[in-house]
Length: 115
Image 1 (cartoon, rainbow, N blue to C red):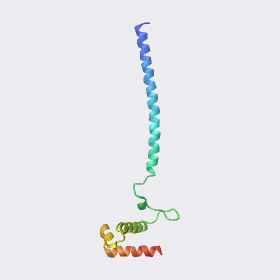
Image 2 (cartoon, helix red, strand yellow):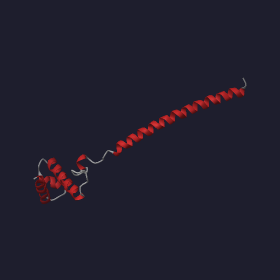
Image 3 (cartoon, one colour):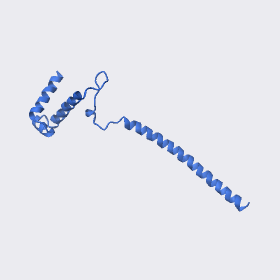
Image 4 (spheres, rainbow, N blue to C red):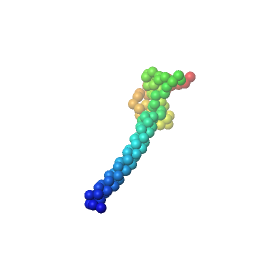
């Protein structure tokens, strides 16, 4: 065999290895793309807000007006503050930056809503 044909065979073998590597890399790339799509789909369904702060739809599945959501948030926030302060409304009001009168007004509205 001549040197040219030996060199050609070596180049062909090297080319075949490279093509095989390219095919493997393409397959790995497809798998990574599928994993990325799957993760993106999962991430889209994840909220960064705690469950207690997420908007809750009304009974018919529609979103409630903003003022209703704000009111519910205020009630929930004050309720958590009072719980954290073991029922001490004065301390809870001070902790969340509202007056004691506002805290009692909100608590009264909360009680009215429950009835």
